[in-house]
Image (cartoon, rainbow, N blue to C red; front, side, top):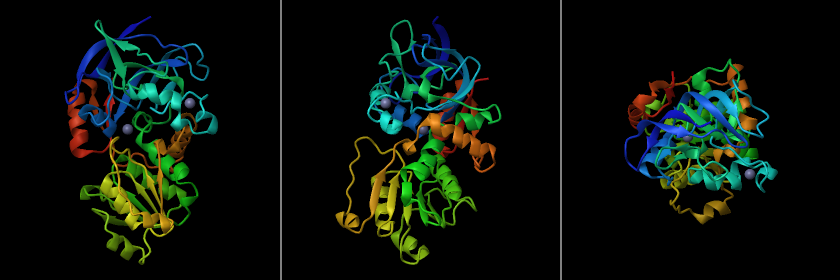
Length: 364
Ligand SMILES: [Zn+2]
Ligand SMILES: [Zn+2]
């Protein structure tokens, strides 16, 4: 049976979100109806508003969060009513060419509808009297209730605090995967690492690097307020090859995690990394951005590797991250999140834009 839900709706580009009641159809095959308890915000939500990403509108924003399963559609066997779950935008079909090669983050069946604001079957569950309302990244966590695909809905223990369960699905998984999966053998124990960008992703990359046995860590972050003592071993406000050479005895870092992925940071990272070293592009670039690189850097065996969602599978990898947190091996409380109610969503988005950091929306 269709229900009504209050949701934060983006009606058109560059407009404030409108919190209003809309309709939500029941979950179809392989789908799950979730009652949201908390949603996490990150830069992709702002990018949807500015038109950096091109989604159909009206659109219910939010692409990570945690809540409880209310109803499951046919074919859902791993979840039941009452289960506590965390949401991820990286749902996948489990059957396509990529999924069968353990690259679910590249799933071709789900990517196309996801980029258009549809669920994997190519339709929407949100609507109002006049028309369809679209799903942001297949999650739409800024709604009291949402319908998601089963592989983007991961069970989470009652012991994991709500703000951790809600704000892990995007930035933390991306960061961990970049270090533990995408980087592969390039990330060696004792490696000198440079992390570009000290926001949610960069901070989580540093946490993962410590666990992986990194040597010296250099953080490049232009906002000096984020140079918290003890987080990195050296800091810079822009990539300066002369400075990184000096820190690394003229060699350059072994590996760079570029969490910004702008033209400047990619070129700077490639210049700074040592001969034979690796740059992992962790951040999401503007879809139309082109980059220019020195071909001779590749002749010197420097490598530039792409990373989407840290090459992660949410069903496989999110429980491991929650385990690490519970075992005290991971400090995700760093820079505690600020919490707003759904009605204050526009204030929360302004705070995200102006101050960054972790921001969550509480549905109490
Ligand atoms: Zn697939
Ligand atoms: Zn995100």
